[in-house]
Amino acid sequence: MTNSTSTTARAGRREWTAFGVLMLPLLLVSMDVSVLYFAIPSISADLEPSGTQQLWIFDIYAFVLAGLLMTMGSLGDRIGHRRLLLIGAAAFGTASLVAAYANSAETLIAARAVLGIGGATLMPSTMALLRTMFTDPGQRAKAIGMWSGVMTAGIALGSVMSGVLVEYFWWGSVFLVNLPAMVLLLVLGRALLPESKNPAPGPFDWPSIPLSMAAVLPVVYGLKEIPSEGWNVRYVVSITVGLLFAALFVHRQRTTASPMISPALFRGRGFGPSVALNLVSAFGIMGSAYFTTQYLQSVLDKSALEAALWALLPSVPIGAAAPAATALVQKGVDRAHVVTAGFAIAAGGFALLSLAGTDSMWLVLVACAVLAVGGVIVMSQIMDLAMGTAPVERAGTASSLMETGTEFGGALGMAVLGSIGTAVYRHEMPASAPAEARETLGGALALADEVPGLATVAREAFTSGMTGAAIAGAVLLAGAAVLAAVTLRGVRAAQCKTPDGQCSPSGV
Image (cartoon, rainbow, N blue to C red; front, side, top):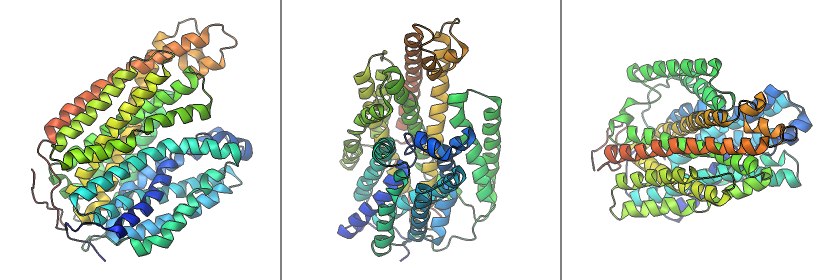
């Protein structure tokens, strides 16, 4: 069946069962972002990769995922999101099996790249199918809230699961856990999931594929490297090149007859602000994680697994955040007020983080929980607004844009806040400290046995850097709260019915 019109029929048991099936691959795709955190040492001992190969084993998944999201979203709109989802599930499952039993670094890198391709098909397809199955606004909002919570929880669970599996099994087991969910999706997906695609998509915009990848990959690469390596000219050039290709990509979308990303999506008053505000929310969540994971492990001297288990605590209240926000909107509270409150709560989390000292574990965990709750409130409401504004025929494209913005926002948050924290750290470290110790906290701790008192000074300097970055994050998110209040006031998800993306202006 091809769903090309908007309806308000309420979903029943079949749709909610299908939704549960869809959440399994979403959870695993988000977990794969962090699932190698504790497996890398075992992989290095077994496969003996070079330093460059080790970096590619870790990063290739996220790079391929980010680079192909827009392409796969647009492709799903054309060939059908259920079809693309099942193809992606088969690829993801096969690549997981190959990765689990890889006998060389090259094989593992290739398998991780295919996992990224599969992930790029799964993420926008799940959201697009969700948009098709839940046409009732209230049910759609509830489902999207749960979708946001599952995706956020998956990133947190990935590192913990890898630690537990590597502790009791072998490193390949972190990939084998993907197989049951993908098999279940392949078996049940065809029977439970409706097909959804654009009935008149026009010719596929092939030149936009390399243009989109050339725009996304250099920027994401540069932003991911800056926190650890600093503002090296190589990374600045990479970001600049990506931005130039981004300008060419946007120009093509505005001038070609059948673009990959239709400019009509941005004609609805709420879609453009949704993309921007979603990026800012990801900026805050991922930017804070850059510090808090190091704080638990290096400042408080927790083991890697201990740190990961403590880091799960802030995820507990996430499950209630999105449903509560959805309930407020359904009771008539202006969505702009809810999103504004979400940003204000997240800014409050950063404000709490700025008060941390070198022995403030519970304060840091509470700050992370407050920040995560605010971020999930924002993301769930913004995603619901964006998907409600987009026509069903372009649900995959709309979802891929939001998820690409999330990738950009996360990388940008780690780069900007990480750079602020690093600058403060280096300023706080005494000039007499060894050069390695002045660069990073890890470098200082490696020399702690040789230089008395160095570890204490370095931990205090890192904490000062974290608090400085937290102040910057609080200011940014407070500004985003004001922006949300202005740009989203009175905006509701419009009812989009036509393939050209024209939406009725309800609530605008």
